[in-house]
Image (tube, rainbow, N blue to C red; front, top):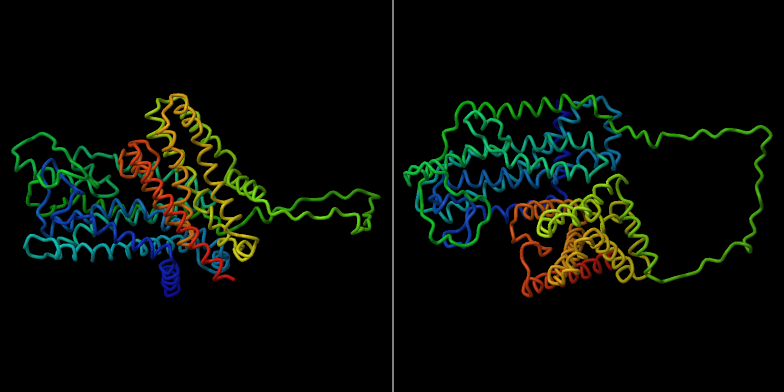
Length: 517
């Protein structure tokens, strides 16, 4: 038992001390600060018709718990879904495989380690919500129970299931990061659209947020004396907040069925870990153990020919950037399984056959998101494979290597969007054409700047998932490719962002090269 706890401890410390975790924690706190708007803010997060809750303990506790359950489930998966892969790459897993630690214990401590990482962020957000209460409250008394109750019953079971899900994906799809991203993307979307119709169906809600939202709607119905469904908005909605009316929300009396279901979700997670244990291969790398049998031919004699150095072709020194661009393009196109390009081709065909609006607003962001695994290590693969010493010491690493990497990423994104760009060109819709062009450059530079700053790819994967999910749901503030807005001012904003990204990329990478030298 002591060894088991120590293993969880050291794995937890190793993951929480990484740059990716610290940056994700800071980003989570910054976003959590906006979960409950300040009294004079120009936006709202949870609003029922023209009503928002009074700023009492229950409103702060439940709103932040709901937003944390959804937000951290969204980004938490990408934060913790590489624990087993990291052990495999660092050979720690092979060492563990040689010990008496069983597969079940290993998968269990990985799940608990994932859960502890997510709990750390939840605890920081929890403290942030209490701080916001004392900053914004309407003079109401502080009740710690109204904060603890929703976090325990709503947030923690949801995050435990996400921790289990990350382990399940790694067991079956450890080498296929792109497939993991796509599957979780659609799984999360399907879980979000689930709407319980009866009280017992709330037990099927993984996030546990639907019952709280339903209770808020019932509170507004009592005030308005209306049985009609009120317009509900969850998320960041700008404008029209000054006209909002206040209603008292005093928390939720969770039924026993719901409380029991939250416990069952946790037990269900343990059951899943038990069920997948036989499928875990315990870090056996069968590919490296395959040997080709060489048939010996009777009478064959190996003859070693003398090598004359003077007859060898002389190497030609070339400082051209084109071979590097070609190499980076080949690495991008060949990355991942070949059959995955079938999905990309289907997406490109949909850009041709679907209506322009649907192709631009729905298909294009999904098609670009499918390349997250390619873009995320565009400028970080040198660090991962420990070749950055060689790359940074090459001839003009900024002007040649870095530019070739950015060029290859931009060509890939524009190639995928080429059918849509051609359609806009034929219709002389050059504003949309330019928006897609700048959008491809924007997302490649975003991946590069986050990769260079964090020296990893997790933060970009998390952020790109959030952006893609917002695009699919029609949130115009996440539009970076001109799907929901256009105009000269919009293009100027993209150009400014691109200029800032380029400046950061050059300055930070130049500093890294100098420090390494």
